[in-house]
Length: 167
Image 1 (cartoon, helix red, strand yellow):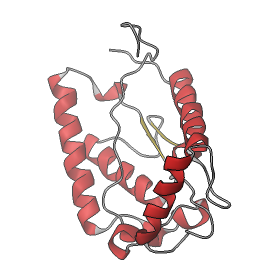
Image 2 (cartoon, rainbow, N blue to C red):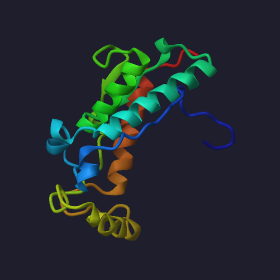
Image 3 (tube, rainbow, N blue to C red):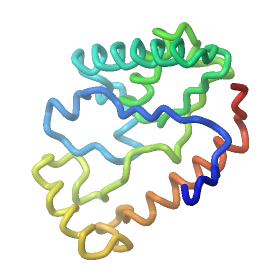
Image 4 (tube, helix red, strand yellow):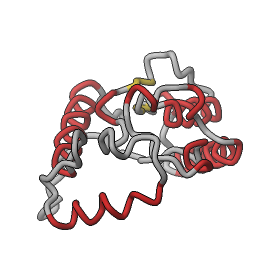
């Protein structure tokens, strides 16, 4: 934001997914096909992290006097993020299948391409090196940093058009 202008009408609380099974296994899981598989949801530690995050969010809402009816949960369809959203929603006593929650494909993980998919996390430095050289360069068959920015901008535009803050 520049010069005190507000461009967004909603307030946001952004949460990364908890520790996932791919995190434990040291795997890159970035394709929609693999990312939505149940076998790649949260590890038990990640469930605990999501529960704690939900409790922290609930406390913050209470401190700011924001009613739960004003909360919207938008999340990626990847199993690790939908699992995180489900745990947080349960702490807030909100149904993940209800009107306050929405899975959005544009919020998904960056796709690193087939040469990285289901390989070791040790390959991430290769991607970061490519990103440093040119944020518009895509790993073979994957998304560039610029692609992800465009996708997330699209998601934010949809969220801003569909939800309005009431506080």
